[in-house]
Image 1: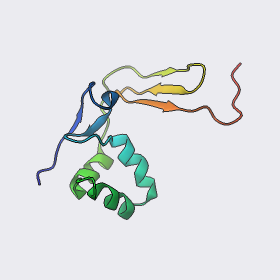
Image 2 (image 1 turned 60 degrees about the horizontal axis):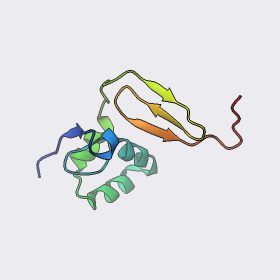
Image 3 (image 1 turned 30 degrees about the horizontal axis):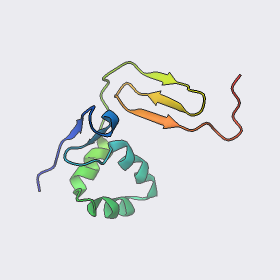
Length: 98
């Protein structure tokens, strides 16, 4: 299987970077990496990713496509990274805003 490129499309996954032809976000692969490499490979092989695609996702350097920004709505906050990723974050337990 030929390694698929990492792409970004505003119509898929809210513009998150992903492996082409999938709905697997690069950021999700990186978060799952914390579970361990063998577990990561097992999970994503079942989703038809190759070891090379997993390694490419882990090594991917998110390019800047906009200015970074942070949005703080009344509940969780969203970090708008310069790479185009929007990452919602729940407030920390007990957090207070003044």
